[in-house]
Length: 204
Image: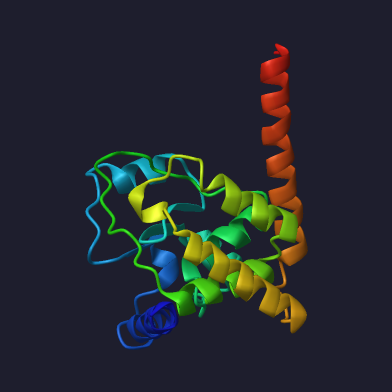
């Protein structure tokens, strides 16, 4: 499905430009939203107010046009995890995507699909997520309170790891930003750990 979504968005952008003369640069944002999502009234306005190039969740993703044109080369990614690719690219540039946290953000829970979870594991490898960080993220997700649409089963995590290992063993080509992404993810995690250490040590 994500591959078809990316292809459809690119075709639609080309059609409105070629057939109707509507330029992408005439707009400030692109908003991709799934049909089965119920959003709070202030969802888009809040994300815009944060002035982040990328914001929201995968099912309701707001992308600034400058970021779309410069970073994504005006092409929506054709990927099995398109929103994850966009988030990873943003992180690689040192820009953490803006989040929206509210109880009235309703997204259907994810149904386990082993092919999709395996593909996600491959994507994690291609982004540049280190093996250690992969394990840390998966382990922490078992203990951190996540929203329903963020929760994954142990089976899903096992298939994520399997996909990651398959990509590693087959030396799958990584995305061009993988080194920057890995550095920024590791740096972000280290900063979180230091904050916890300082907190428990009573250092402000």
